[in-house]
Length: 323
Image 1 (cartoon, helix red, strand yellow):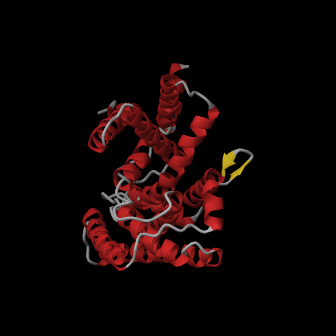
Image 2 (tube, rainbow, N blue to C red):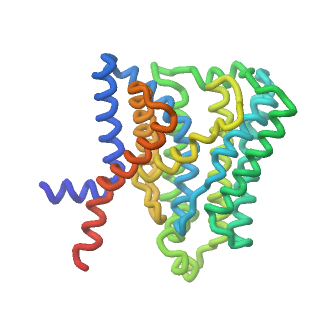
Image 3 (cartoon, rainbow, N blue to C red):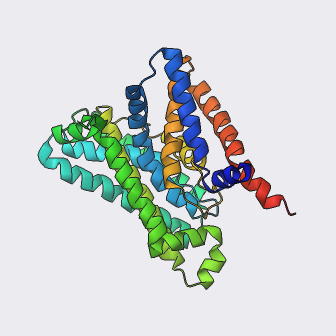
């Protein structure tokens, strides 16, 4: 039985994120005397906004070779300004605003891929530079206009609506995660993505179209960040400078805590959702304890390391047991 349990854990590393989330929910609920299903739903709801961007980050990390999209915070911020500025509280402009959020994100992802592929700049440096450009663009836009605070009724219904007591956002993100899971595991693109992350040279010899796959990956990542930006702005009734900054650490943390290999070659969609919930519950716990923003970042970093050590010890032991 023990060996079977070890095998299950080894093959499903996302279990640690799920168990950690449940433990945190119980601790928070008992400490606040508010242990009920509604409190869990609220935390899941908040985590779903992070999960949208984290799913895109997961695809980039799966490419391997140190691939991390550091432009996500900038994409979230600028897409929030542009999409909400266009919608401006009007239902008739909702689709236009959504298209703008997706297109601006996709275009930024395309530019990221061009810099990484053709200029041979490491992904972390390339996307970091793009992030600085986007921050400057958001600053210039903000100077030209006042912060956007109007949310159209359709977007408000999506953000705050419920069906059978469950927030619509949870349904939306679960469907999105299922689609991405199917893409990764059942399509030529997904198989090529995994192959590149495991061994790019072997993938090239096998005929994988490296440039095409890398380009699609960055485009999807930034497009999802664009959608996240619009939805986050709608939830908080406005866009402001730096609104995407917290999503830098948390998208990476949610992905790796959920079992996706930081070295690439393995993507765990359900784990990414669980990892985002875990981080959200950590933040809730720290707010209850009165931690300031700096202490929150330190604590998140330490806890991410701890959960990664616990979650990867079985894999590491198996890898080196015959060395």
